[in-house]
Amino acid sequence: REEPGQALLEPVALEPRHGARVDVDLDFAAKRLRVLAVEMETPDEAEKVIEFYREAAADFVFSKKDHGRVQFRWEHGNLQKIVGIVEKGGKTRISLAHIGEPEAN
Image (tube, rainbow, N blue to C red; front, top):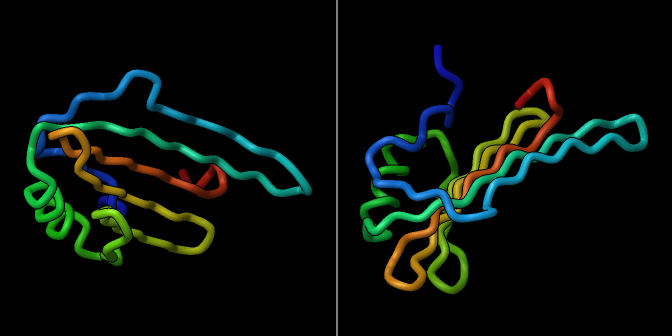
């Protein structure tokens, strides 16, 4: 069985942005935290990308933010998965983040 939010990158033509991937392990105060993040962009219109994520991430909480940004968020225990979408410069930027204990990522 797939974990919610695991396969969320299918229908859009994605182009990884230069220097836009981050993988950080933090170990402090007897707590470990891993942050995995990537930013991509696509020539697809933001509405098309948002509609895809509304279906593919139906169990995520959808919210509209300031400046036309949209966010999908899923939390379970110490794990958070976040999808951010914004249109900039004629392209749609998609930011994905997984935040949690290393074992959860």
